[in-house]
Length: 523
Image (tube, rainbow, N blue to C red; front, side, top):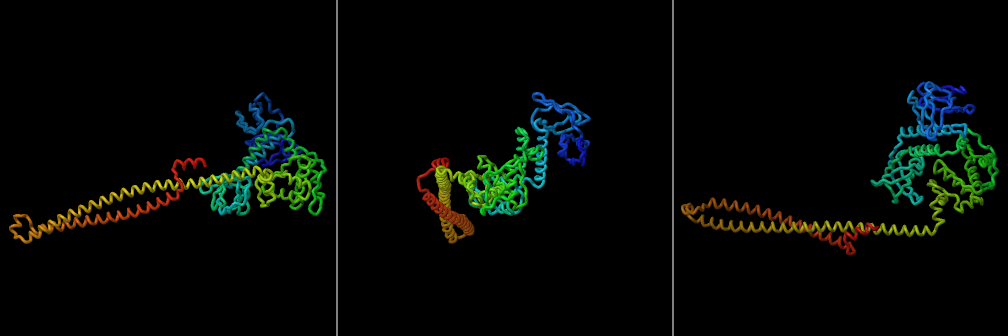
């Protein structure tokens, strides 16, 4: 909705989501502070004194014109959300600054609100993302941490240096996004040193950078002693508007100087606290920047060139390298005074040679040799650890095999005892059957009267012999099954003894589990 400023009566766009509170008229010829009542949708002048500063408190007046209740709030230099207990009006209050006529805290509040809106928008679009990464391969190393390039299934807008967590083979590692190009992503991983990663899951919090920026703005509100520079950035206060003549001018390979527009821009940057260089691609913005930095650096100043992406920073470094034929640039490069902080994206060895890690290796050869010795020691310890871990596994397997051998021997002994028992029972049955056959033979030669008195009826004897033979067959069947089981146990014992012998032979020295555990703990 549109409302008129209560001072200059120019139209203002008051958003529906704007909270009640103090705001500054954006028109330069006004820039006065007014109060917006969200419930009524009205703007009011703030003409009366609104604060009384005590030792640790500030007494402010409710900025609802129909209330004007005095409120006591903490005396801190930050923006507070104040709610009047009488009329329930809520408004943002920040301590007024006496040094400048403009509201620096209001400027910070606008940035804070814009960042909050951006965070909400990112969350709406899926701020926490999990990307499926495939075909990862190591493409470089920065500060002893490896950079891996992966293929991704979809493009996701993620800021460089966004921290993340990557899951590789069920284990989580800290990571950060180096760059995102089409369906390729470069990731810096901490603590992982494999050459390839076939599959991984990358968990990204896309709001991280925005939240860190909000925290930085909050600290800025506490620590800022002077608001002049940011107010000049946003044209609240005029800059010097002076020209500074460069001490050094960089010529290209053809001996060509910067053109008149670039020269004007260089002089403006050297003569002012804040300058903006704007222009279409190819107009020499980066060349102008390199000239300005070169002039400052060779006049004894320290310069920080900060870019919004890693690749933009690489482009600036490449421009410095283009002018290494110039004595001033060559001196900076040779002395290691041009340092690339962060992770280069462009695979240019000259850029990588300017990283802290590379400069460190070049300027500290002795430490580099010590590093190599430590690396060799680490590798030897890893190899020793691996060898003793294998010994531990073999030792444990030998112990298990010995237990199986003992159980197998016990089972063989028990099986032999069962076979011996079946054999004895068969022999006893054979003896009884033989006696029955002999008695049957006698009974068949007797007459019926004698068999009657003797109780030796041939028919009963034949039935008894048949039953005994059936029992004998069962005993034989059980003995044969047990003999088969014995053969299997014997074969298993033979295999176990062979396996145990091979495993013991692989242990080249007399070793015990206590010694193995001690070495593993040491390595």
